[in-house]
Image: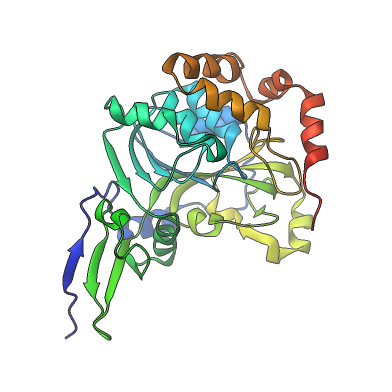
Length: 327
């Protein structure tokens, strides 16, 4: 009989231990009917995100980040959230709003503008009670394990690094080769929010350009909210089925959100709003500045449409003009 010998393990807390049988049963009970799921950000967040939920977003940096949904989460004040931290702007805003209690983090920073002041304040003040470190690949592979229905996935990434020491990874000797292998536990989240280029009203979603880890995250979430730049007919989806990264039966809510990633960017559609990102980077250096930014761009508007009007359509159209047109 082959047995694993644990030779090393990280000291980080496993915030959401995987329960694969419960997840399997959840998916078995999830409705599979082709029903209209189109709704507003307000309804989607109100119905499918609850206080204390474990939440994950996709993609990385300022690319395709689900900002319209994030601002609505803040407006509704969902609290005590646990977060898989692989984003930038969306997670930074949630931290600054005081809604996050625990994070499994890869990196939260503002890229060329440096590390996150909001994260530093949240951790140093004790607002964030648990921080566990993982690599970018490790978080994505943990979603992959959940999507595959296995309790862990063996990798050689993170071996010999401090990231392993502050995560909940276990290192074993491979029963076939005797070499060290890192075991990454599956990560099943309560809610995933993903912003895509196109979707139909049932939830079939297509992404142009780099798909990131949308495929894996969509299959690792109990509830899935999709926001889309464009809502298209199902007949159009069926013309190019190979582009459908996320099928309808995984999705609980579909939100039409043009410029839904603003001030981030969408490949081929619009560039990132450098001026507004810099405004956040400077404002978030202090608690008072971050609060003023949230008051200006989140709390003072009732919904995404009012946010876009505040930003101004002329400015938004210029971002379209600056988008890369390569295909």
